[in-house]
Image 1 (cartoon, rainbow, N blue to C red):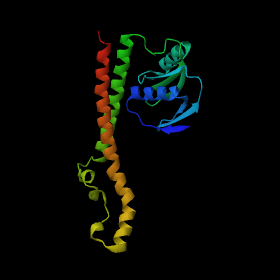
Image 2: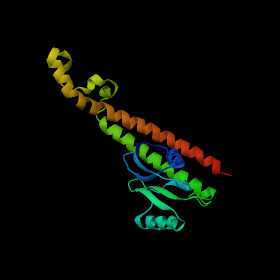
Image 3: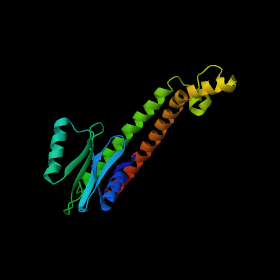
Image 4: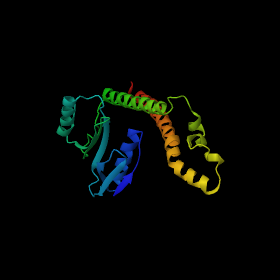
Length: 202
């Protein structure tokens, strides 16, 4: 079975994967485009955890993976472009990747950095689309149509020109909105992760 999901919150993604597991569906493959592959299982005594280690160098990444494999974890997926690791293991009472508050705080600090990096990147992409300072085609979709005299045409001539131009207009109009929304979401996640740290501060 395959499902398509997009997550900005790693904690919610982890919870969803474990909810699926509790229903008898264990994740076997995760695609970076948002597709998750599941297979039916009767073994519900498993747990999935997600960690973000974007700053690990190659040799440190090898040691990191070996450490958790020694404790019984199996790497389900590694996103090399942002250092996100998906781990799965059988429940044995030690089902958390991090057992102390300092490690949990360090985890959320990494997630804060992860979110801030993506927020900055999406904002840069947004500004690239409008590096000429012309925001009209961002606010008014008509301005995203570049065909000269389009709105003065009539009948079939208008319909043909409109349909021909529409895919290009949408490519100019929609992506900046997506980048701006992504920027806002990552910014919200940054502050949410920062708030999560408070529960581990004595």
